[in-house]
Length: 100
Image (tube, rainbow, N blue to C red):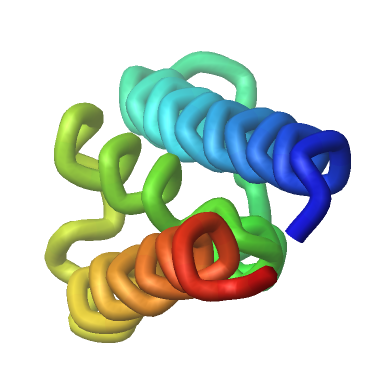
């Protein structure tokens, strides 16, 4: 794969993962604030968190999930986020080293 295209893909991968990490932290902080009796704020829908994970943000989502201890009790997050992260990292490695 061309060096320029690879660089662009890696930058996009990094941005999506950073955003997924931030979204997990923001949703956790809103959940805590809602539990402390403050004015209820809207949470980030689980569909949005999964969308970022599917769009190559599963590594950031997984890191956010475990560093913020958020959504870890939901089996579908605990199973699919790390699994997607492994698949996505495998795809990145494949594109980087095994394509022409």
